[in-house]
Image (cartoon, rainbow, N blue to C red; front, side):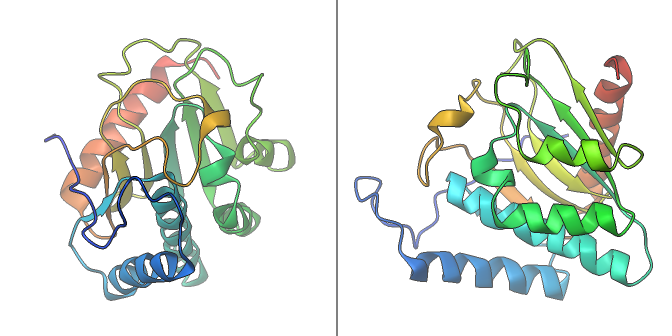
Length: 206
């Protein structure tokens, strides 16, 4: 599978200007929503944590739309610290609806331990043990080889290039910067991500 990288968003403000405007958020939301609803095959860039939060929200909206149409979905998440800054905000409502409606969520955390963080997202396993599974690698090496991604079935995903471990407590709108891409309709790369995830998943203890 080829390495996915992302250029900087041309509409973004200077990295020295750390004020996030509502207009910038709405603009990015609109771009991703159009891609989601049109079934676009385009890959869209994602760099900042606030980008990530919007992207995850849109991907889970897609998963919920598909389930509303009668197609049960599986969402696979390979993450480091599963930061609440990304997964515990607006997207958490979409995740909750997803599992309430019968979707399956598999979370693989590539980290030594989630005990100190206890991400909000993993709490869904407490109420939905048959649908939400969480596995932890109990190691945090090989970060330069293990990409993080959220995959909806086979064709919709957000994919980050491999990067150093991130302290979830330090996330902000603009830090850390991690090049990534989002696609709502790319089964070629999506199948590769599913195979990669499932191989790692099978090697981890429940």
